Each structure stands twice: as structure tokens, then as C-alpha cells.
Image 1: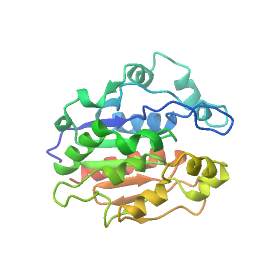
Image 2: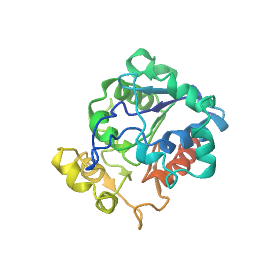
Image 3: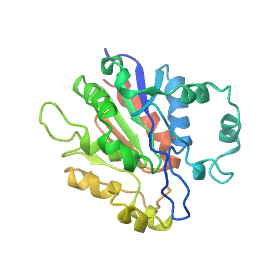
Image 4: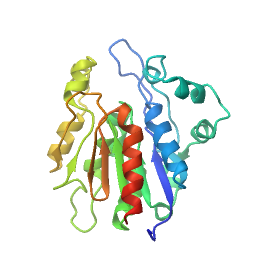
Length: 240
């Protein structure tokens, strides 16, 4: 049994501005927060939702009929659902006590490429969780935050010398977004991981369910992996 608080911080991107070539905004990929929230609460965690600024916006591409299952759509359309209520009352990371959490889970959406690398409040919570022996987890584009989370013992990123996954370059190309990412000067997940000294592994198909567990570090590759990544994060916590 872990001596750490059975409380999780579910990080949400605060960026909800233009990104897509057609002018659409990006932001939170809805199910990449919903699915981990569902897994964590079912496992008995208290879960707080926070972004760097205390604001958020949902990526419209993540709530289309093709992006949501019937079950997901029922939750999305129920504004009284517990998850939606917490999302509507999202907290600002710097207002929280980092020591209150034993698990940090970063949800995603392309918005994370904009704000996670400089999200000092979220990074501080993750660094505290890691320093106290807790679990840090991220899915899809959320590993954009990992190179910037420092191990207090080494001064290097917590992913230095470790193995991670995240959204693939192949996936960005399939979505016709790699050129936009480069145009905006954003750092793809693969590049950020390697630059931080990590070994990057990817699934055979860009949207295949795929997770990587390296001790207390748990990562997932894409939206379909959000549930499995959270399950693995809970398993890692239970082993502490």
C-alpha cells in the first residue's frame, strides 16, 4: 500500500486557440481526460482537474460523432455528469498544494504542445509527485510536458534514460498536421522525448492501443490508449 495520498491531479491544457489548417481551434481532447478520470475514480482516487491558467477549451474535433463512442456521447451531453461538473469548475494549478497528490496524469489534445512545455504550475505538481515517489503519467500529446519535469536528484528530466511513448510523427502526417506543427515552431512528441534523453517507442499503427511503463513513469500513444494508460498508472501506484 502506497503511503502517498490516493489523490490524482488530472492536468488539462489551457490552450484553446487556433491550430488547424482550416482555422479551427484546438484544446483538450475530451476523452483523453474523461477516460482517465473514469478509471481513476473507479480505482478509489479523489481526482482534481487543473490547467495552468484555470481555463480550458474542448477541441471540437474530439467531440464529433466519429470521435465519441455512444457511451462517451452520453457523458458529453450530460452537463450534470460529475466529470463535466469538475471540468466546468477547473482549478488553476498554482492554487493547489502539490503535496496533496500521489499521482499526476496529463491529459492531452494538440493544445498541450502550446502550453505544457512552459506550464510552471502543472510542472511543479508533477515534480513534487515524482520527488515523493509517486506516479507520473501522460497520454498522446501530453508527453510534451515530460521533458520539462525535472528529477530533483539529478537536475535532468524525469524521462532522461527512460522509455516513453506518445503521439507519433506518422500520426501527425496522417492527420495532415505535421506541416502546421513545424510552421508554428511546436515540438513533436517524438523529438521532445529524444532531446530529453529518452528512448521513444511507438505502436505499429498510429491509433493502435499502446502503452509504455517504465517504473513510476507511464505513457500512452494516442486517444484510444487513454483508458489503458490510466489503468497502467493505477497499477504502478498500487505497486509503490
